[in-house]
Each structure stands twice: as C-alpha cells, then as structure tokens.
Amino acid sequence: MKTKKQPNILLTGQLFDGYDDEYQCPILDEDRVVDELDEKMSEGGVIVDYHGCDLFPERWFDIVFVLRTDNTQLYTRLEARGYTGKKLQDNVQCEIFQTIYEEAMEAYSKEIVHQLPSNTPEDMEHNLEQIVHWTEQWMKDHN
Figure 1 (cartoon, rainbow, N blue to C red):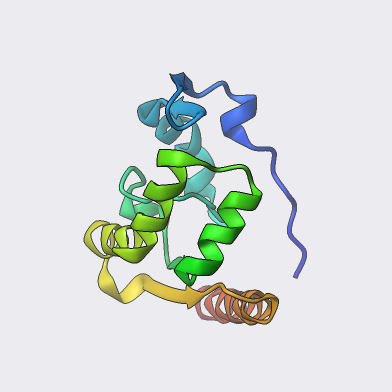
Figure 2: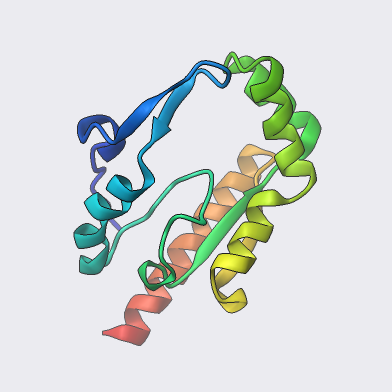
C-alpha cells in the first residue's frame, strides 16, 4: 500500500491562535483547524495523527487508534524530546489516567475506538501491520 505524505497543515496553514509559554507550543485555533480539514476529510483516505480527539467530528472517522505507552518509557521519550516541568508532568499524567482513550470513547462510537500498545519497535511494527490489514479489509468491504 502506497501512501502520500501530506504537508502538516497546521504549519502551512497558519492555524494558530497564539503561543503557550508554559507548554512551549503554539495554541491551535480549533475552529480553523476543523474548517481547513473538513473538505480533505470528506474525500476519505486520510489518516489524522493528533494527541487529542474531542475537536474532530465523528463523521470523519471509520476507526480510531489510541496508542498507549508505559509511563516510564513515555517519561524517557518525552525527556529526550526536551519536555520539562509541567509539560512533561501533564503528558505523563494524561497517560496514567487514560485521558485520550476516555476522550475517544466519549467522542466516538465505542465500536470504532481501539487501544494499541506502543512501547517497543516491535509494538510499532505490529501496530502498522494491524492498521494496514484493517485498511485493506475496509477497502474490500466498501468498494
């Protein structure tokens, strides 16, 4: 299966509404993000990679995968990316309390939300295989 990597619309579309000094990251203008993506999403065949889900309409998705990581590994990964202080603590707490998974379960039909472990390179390879298999089966079922 070939995929075409699309540019990051958040960067190219200037879909920011300021900068958060505490978290050291841009603040998304969520309404503009949804407006910008809506036409692309209606065409289908799009994968959205984001660290939250409550801003995206359910109609966009046939399946949702929530990647889960052991807290110790997550801490090490984020520290290696330069996360510190509140940003690091909040991200680890979010994983401990399954915040993204619970948001996904509330925002979308429970039948389309799936958790996948993402601790090792082997996990990531297995996840990729599962997602490719699911995509191929979905295409067979819907074409």
